[in-house]
View (cartoon, rainbow, N blue to C red):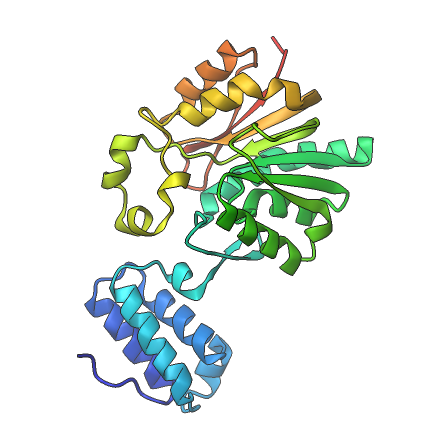
Length: 292
Protein backbone atom coordinates (compact mmCIF):
# COMPACT_ATOMS: atom_id res chain seq x y z
CA UNK A 1 0.00 0.00 0.00
CA UNK A 2 1.46 3.35 -1.03
CA UNK A 3 2.00 6.06 1.55
CA UNK A 4 -0.67 8.80 1.67
CA UNK A 5 -0.08 11.61 -0.78
CA UNK A 6 0.98 15.00 0.64
CA UNK A 7 -1.48 17.91 0.55
CA UNK A 8 1.03 20.57 -0.55
CA UNK A 9 1.43 20.89 -4.33
CA UNK A 10 5.24 20.67 -4.50
CA UNK A 11 5.62 17.56 -2.33
CA UNK A 12 2.56 16.07 -4.03
CA UNK A 13 4.24 16.33 -7.42
CA UNK A 14 7.45 14.80 -6.06
CA UNK A 15 5.63 11.86 -4.49
CA UNK A 16 3.57 11.28 -7.66
CA UNK A 17 6.75 11.20 -9.71
CA UNK A 18 8.43 8.85 -7.21
CA UNK A 19 5.57 6.37 -7.49
CA UNK A 20 5.82 6.34 -11.27
CA UNK A 21 9.61 6.05 -11.16
CA UNK A 22 9.26 3.04 -8.84
CA UNK A 23 6.86 1.46 -11.33
CA UNK A 24 9.30 2.06 -14.22
CA UNK A 25 6.82 4.24 -16.12
CA UNK A 26 8.48 5.55 -19.27
CA UNK A 27 8.21 9.31 -18.62
CA UNK A 28 7.45 9.61 -14.90
CA UNK A 29 8.05 13.35 -14.48
CA UNK A 30 5.77 14.35 -17.35
CA UNK A 31 3.02 11.87 -16.49
CA UNK A 32 3.07 12.89 -12.81
CA UNK A 33 2.76 16.55 -13.77
CA UNK A 34 -0.07 15.90 -16.22
CA UNK A 35 -2.02 13.89 -13.64
CA UNK A 36 -1.51 16.31 -10.75
CA UNK A 37 -2.29 19.41 -12.82
CA UNK A 38 -5.37 17.87 -14.40
CA UNK A 39 -7.03 16.59 -11.24
CA UNK A 40 -5.98 19.49 -8.97
CA UNK A 41 -6.75 22.25 -11.46
CA UNK A 42 -3.29 23.73 -10.99
CA UNK A 43 -0.56 24.83 -13.39
CA UNK A 44 3.18 24.30 -13.66
CA UNK A 45 3.69 27.98 -12.78
CA UNK A 46 1.71 27.59 -9.54
CA UNK A 47 3.79 24.54 -8.57
CA UNK A 48 6.98 26.55 -9.00
CA UNK A 49 5.76 29.81 -7.44
CA UNK A 50 3.68 28.35 -4.61
CA UNK A 51 4.85 24.78 -3.81
CA UNK A 52 3.11 24.88 -0.41
CA UNK A 53 -0.28 25.51 -2.02
CA UNK A 54 -2.81 23.10 -0.50
CA UNK A 55 -4.68 20.66 -2.71
CA UNK A 56 -8.12 19.58 -1.52
CA UNK A 57 -8.82 16.03 -0.42
CA UNK A 58 -11.12 15.15 -3.30
CA UNK A 59 -8.41 16.12 -5.79
CA UNK A 60 -5.81 14.11 -3.87
CA UNK A 61 -8.09 11.07 -3.93
CA UNK A 62 -8.55 11.46 -7.69
CA UNK A 63 -4.79 11.82 -8.17
CA UNK A 64 -4.18 8.71 -6.07
CA UNK A 65 -6.61 6.71 -8.23
CA UNK A 66 -5.09 8.06 -11.43
CA UNK A 67 -1.58 7.15 -10.30
CA UNK A 68 -2.70 3.60 -9.54
CA UNK A 69 -4.19 3.34 -13.03
CA UNK A 70 -0.95 4.63 -14.57
CA UNK A 71 1.14 2.20 -12.51
CA UNK A 72 -1.19 -0.51 -13.81
CA UNK A 73 -0.17 0.35 -17.37
CA UNK A 74 -3.06 2.55 -18.53
CA UNK A 75 -1.82 5.35 -20.83
CA UNK A 76 -1.82 8.76 -19.19
CA UNK A 77 -4.07 10.36 -21.83
CA UNK A 78 -6.66 7.61 -21.39
CA UNK A 79 -6.69 8.50 -17.69
CA UNK A 80 -7.05 12.22 -18.42
CA UNK A 81 -9.73 11.52 -21.03
CA UNK A 82 -8.23 13.69 -23.74
CA UNK A 83 -5.23 14.09 -26.00
CA UNK A 84 -3.81 17.09 -27.82
CA UNK A 85 -3.59 16.65 -31.59
CA UNK A 86 -2.50 19.36 -34.00
CA UNK A 87 -3.21 21.96 -31.32
CA UNK A 88 -6.73 20.62 -30.63
CA UNK A 89 -7.89 18.98 -27.41
CA UNK A 90 -9.75 15.81 -28.38
CA UNK A 91 -11.80 13.73 -25.96
CA UNK A 92 -10.94 10.03 -25.89
CA UNK A 93 -13.18 7.07 -25.16
CA UNK A 94 -12.57 3.30 -25.16
CA UNK A 95 -14.10 3.26 -28.67
CA UNK A 96 -11.41 5.47 -30.19
CA UNK A 97 -7.78 5.11 -31.11
CA UNK A 98 -5.59 7.57 -29.23
CA UNK A 99 -4.41 10.02 -31.91
CA UNK A 100 -0.63 10.23 -32.00
CA UNK A 101 1.88 12.80 -33.24
CA UNK A 102 2.89 10.62 -36.22
CA UNK A 103 -0.59 11.13 -37.68
CA UNK A 104 0.02 14.89 -37.79
CA UNK A 105 2.24 13.99 -40.77
CA UNK A 106 -0.94 13.29 -42.74
CA UNK A 107 -2.32 16.74 -41.92
CA UNK A 108 0.86 18.43 -43.12
CA UNK A 109 0.95 16.25 -46.24
CA UNK A 110 -2.52 17.11 -47.47
CA UNK A 111 -3.06 20.61 -46.03
CA UNK A 112 -1.57 22.58 -48.96
CA UNK A 113 -3.93 20.78 -51.35
CA UNK A 114 -6.92 21.40 -49.04
CA UNK A 115 -6.08 25.11 -48.84
CA UNK A 116 -5.57 25.43 -52.59
CA UNK A 117 -8.81 23.59 -53.37
CA UNK A 118 -10.80 25.71 -50.93
CA UNK A 119 -9.34 28.90 -52.41
CA UNK A 120 -10.17 27.79 -55.96
CA UNK A 121 -13.52 26.06 -55.41
CA UNK A 122 -14.82 27.95 -52.40
CA UNK A 123 -14.79 24.74 -50.36
CA UNK A 124 -12.94 21.46 -49.98
CA UNK A 125 -14.96 18.35 -49.20
CA UNK A 126 -13.06 15.83 -47.07
CA UNK A 127 -13.93 12.20 -46.35
CA UNK A 128 -12.19 10.84 -43.24
CA UNK A 129 -12.41 7.05 -43.24
CA UNK A 130 -12.20 5.45 -39.78
CA UNK A 131 -12.52 8.85 -38.16
CA UNK A 132 -12.25 7.70 -34.51
CA UNK A 133 -11.92 10.88 -32.44
CA UNK A 134 -12.34 12.92 -35.62
CA UNK A 135 -8.68 13.93 -35.38
CA UNK A 136 -7.82 14.14 -39.09
CA UNK A 137 -11.05 15.78 -40.21
CA UNK A 138 -11.18 18.26 -37.35
CA UNK A 139 -7.53 19.26 -37.68
CA UNK A 140 -8.08 20.11 -41.35
CA UNK A 141 -11.34 21.95 -40.63
CA UNK A 142 -9.65 23.96 -37.90
CA UNK A 143 -7.14 25.38 -40.40
CA UNK A 144 -9.36 25.77 -43.49
CA UNK A 145 -12.57 27.57 -42.51
CA UNK A 146 -14.44 26.86 -45.77
CA UNK A 147 -13.73 23.11 -45.79
CA UNK A 148 -16.31 20.50 -44.78
CA UNK A 149 -15.78 16.93 -43.67
CA UNK A 150 -17.64 13.66 -43.31
CA UNK A 151 -16.21 11.33 -40.68
CA UNK A 152 -16.93 7.64 -41.36
CA UNK A 153 -16.66 4.92 -38.75
CA UNK A 154 -18.27 1.56 -38.08
CA UNK A 155 -18.30 2.24 -34.33
CA UNK A 156 -21.25 4.18 -32.92
CA UNK A 157 -19.15 5.05 -29.88
CA UNK A 158 -16.39 6.51 -32.02
CA UNK A 159 -18.87 8.56 -34.04
CA UNK A 160 -20.43 9.93 -30.84
CA UNK A 161 -16.95 10.92 -29.63
CA UNK A 162 -16.04 12.58 -32.93
CA UNK A 163 -19.34 14.48 -32.97
CA UNK A 164 -18.75 15.67 -29.41
CA UNK A 165 -15.23 16.77 -30.28
CA UNK A 166 -16.48 18.68 -33.31
CA UNK A 167 -19.04 20.49 -31.16
CA UNK A 168 -16.57 21.33 -28.41
CA UNK A 169 -14.19 22.81 -30.99
CA UNK A 170 -16.89 24.87 -32.69
CA UNK A 171 -16.63 22.78 -35.86
CA UNK A 172 -19.92 20.89 -35.59
CA UNK A 173 -21.54 22.84 -38.41
CA UNK A 174 -18.95 21.59 -40.91
CA UNK A 175 -18.55 18.01 -39.66
CA UNK A 176 -20.94 15.15 -40.43
CA UNK A 177 -20.66 11.74 -38.76
CA UNK A 178 -21.64 8.72 -40.85
CA UNK A 179 -21.90 5.12 -39.69
CA UNK A 180 -20.58 3.06 -42.56
CA UNK A 181 -18.40 0.02 -43.20
CA UNK A 182 -15.83 1.87 -45.30
CA UNK A 183 -17.71 3.21 -48.39
CA UNK A 184 -20.92 1.20 -47.87
CA UNK A 185 -23.15 4.21 -46.95
CA UNK A 186 -21.01 6.97 -48.46
CA UNK A 187 -22.46 9.16 -51.22
CA UNK A 188 -21.28 12.21 -53.16
CA UNK A 189 -17.81 13.19 -54.29
CA UNK A 190 -14.86 14.51 -52.31
CA UNK A 191 -11.71 16.47 -53.00
CA UNK A 192 -9.77 14.57 -50.34
CA UNK A 193 -10.18 11.07 -48.95
CA UNK A 194 -8.02 10.59 -45.86
CA UNK A 195 -7.52 7.57 -43.64
CA UNK A 196 -5.40 6.27 -40.82
CA UNK A 197 -6.67 2.73 -41.28
CA UNK A 198 -5.93 -0.34 -39.18
CA UNK A 199 -2.60 -1.58 -40.53
CA UNK A 200 -1.30 -4.12 -38.02
CA UNK A 201 -1.33 -7.73 -39.22
CA UNK A 202 -3.77 -9.76 -37.11
CA UNK A 203 -1.10 -12.11 -35.81
CA UNK A 204 1.06 -9.17 -34.67
CA UNK A 205 -1.54 -7.53 -32.39
CA UNK A 206 -0.31 -9.53 -29.39
CA UNK A 207 3.24 -8.23 -29.89
CA UNK A 208 2.30 -4.55 -29.68
CA UNK A 209 3.39 -2.28 -26.86
CA UNK A 210 1.20 -3.05 -23.83
CA UNK A 211 -0.37 0.42 -23.77
CA UNK A 212 -1.52 0.02 -27.39
CA UNK A 213 -2.52 -3.65 -27.23
CA UNK A 214 -4.47 -3.36 -23.98
CA UNK A 215 -6.14 0.03 -24.35
CA UNK A 216 -6.58 0.93 -28.05
CA UNK A 217 -9.62 -0.72 -29.68
CA UNK A 218 -8.50 -3.71 -31.74
CA UNK A 219 -11.03 -2.76 -34.42
CA UNK A 220 -8.83 0.30 -35.08
CA UNK A 221 -5.59 -1.73 -35.15
CA UNK A 222 -6.30 -5.00 -36.97
CA UNK A 223 -5.56 -4.69 -40.70
CA UNK A 224 -6.27 -8.32 -41.48
CA UNK A 225 -3.98 -11.22 -42.24
CA UNK A 226 -1.19 -9.07 -43.72
CA UNK A 227 -2.17 -5.63 -42.37
CA UNK A 228 -3.07 -4.42 -45.87
CA UNK A 229 -6.77 -5.28 -46.21
CA UNK A 230 -8.04 -1.70 -45.62
CA UNK A 231 -5.73 -0.31 -48.33
CA UNK A 232 -7.11 -2.82 -50.83
CA UNK A 233 -10.66 -1.72 -50.00
CA UNK A 234 -9.82 1.99 -50.31
CA UNK A 235 -7.88 1.55 -53.57
CA UNK A 236 -10.61 -0.59 -55.14
CA UNK A 237 -13.62 1.53 -54.17
CA UNK A 238 -12.55 5.16 -53.81
CA UNK A 239 -12.65 6.24 -57.47
CA UNK A 240 -16.40 6.81 -57.72
CA UNK A 241 -16.29 9.16 -54.71
CA UNK A 242 -13.45 11.34 -56.01
CA UNK A 243 -13.68 14.72 -57.70
CA UNK A 244 -11.33 15.34 -60.61
CA UNK A 245 -7.77 16.00 -59.42
CA UNK A 246 -8.69 14.71 -55.94
CA UNK A 247 -6.18 13.21 -53.53
CA UNK A 248 -6.16 10.13 -51.31
CA UNK A 249 -3.93 10.37 -48.24
CA UNK A 250 -3.28 7.29 -46.11
CA UNK A 251 -1.12 6.67 -43.09
CA UNK A 252 0.98 3.51 -43.35
CA UNK A 253 3.11 1.30 -41.17
CA UNK A 254 6.76 2.23 -41.59
CA UNK A 255 7.57 -0.94 -43.59
CA UNK A 256 4.50 -0.85 -45.86
CA UNK A 257 5.43 1.79 -48.43
CA UNK A 258 6.12 -0.57 -51.34
CA UNK A 259 3.15 -2.85 -50.71
CA UNK A 260 0.66 0.03 -50.39
CA UNK A 261 2.12 1.72 -53.48
CA UNK A 262 1.66 -1.49 -55.45
CA UNK A 263 -1.96 -1.83 -54.31
CA UNK A 264 -2.85 1.68 -55.47
CA UNK A 265 -0.86 1.52 -58.72
CA UNK A 266 -2.67 -1.69 -59.62
CA UNK A 267 -5.95 0.18 -59.04
CA UNK A 268 -4.96 2.98 -61.42
CA UNK A 269 -3.19 5.52 -59.24
CA UNK A 270 0.21 7.10 -59.71
CA UNK A 271 2.97 6.18 -57.27
CA UNK A 272 2.21 7.89 -53.99
CA UNK A 273 4.11 10.92 -52.77
CA UNK A 274 5.89 9.87 -49.57
CA UNK A 275 5.98 11.86 -46.33
CA UNK A 276 8.15 10.91 -43.36
CA UNK A 277 7.26 11.32 -39.68
CA UNK A 278 9.39 13.02 -37.03
CA UNK A 279 11.35 9.80 -36.56
CA UNK A 280 12.28 9.69 -40.25
CA UNK A 281 10.00 6.73 -41.02
CA UNK A 282 7.76 6.51 -44.08
CA UNK A 283 4.37 7.46 -42.62
CA UNK A 284 1.99 8.87 -45.26
CA UNK A 285 1.36 8.26 -48.96
CA UNK A 286 -0.67 10.68 -51.07
CA UNK A 287 -2.18 9.35 -54.31
CA UNK A 288 -3.79 10.92 -57.35
CA UNK A 289 -5.81 9.00 -59.90
CA UNK A 290 -5.14 8.84 -63.62
CA UNK A 291 -1.65 10.33 -63.64
CA UNK A 292 1.14 8.46 -65.43
